[in-house]
Length: 148
Image 1: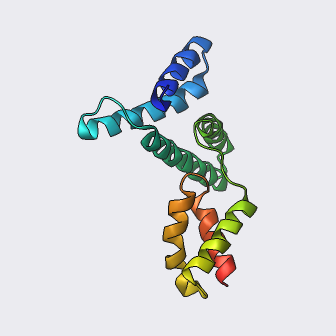
Image 2: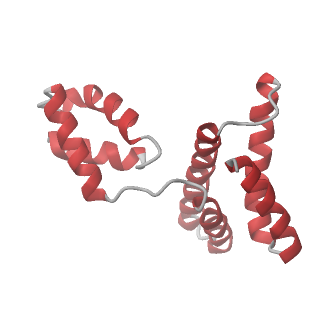
């Protein structure tokens, strides 16, 4: 079963179980998928594109939660974090920081990077290799640490 069908089924289950927060999160995904399908008139979205869309929504939720926390709006931040938990289920398992650090060190050796100016050389191959498995901010932070 495709990821898109799984989300549709989970929307139905959330409706039956009256899980309002889960339903809100899943409807956001469904809306983003519909927008994606309307771009080229397709009737479905491949799983890899669906994962990218969900990852984008997860990132938005994280950023919103941190902004709300900074502004003292814990009620809104809590809502964002709850939706975030429901969305993260559909993403692949994220790598631990130490695993990402090992890959960063390998790529730095492969491209021959030696200073912070070489960060661009490293980021391209790293994002290709770790796409969906690690957060871009974490990768960037580790590359800066290793090249400093």
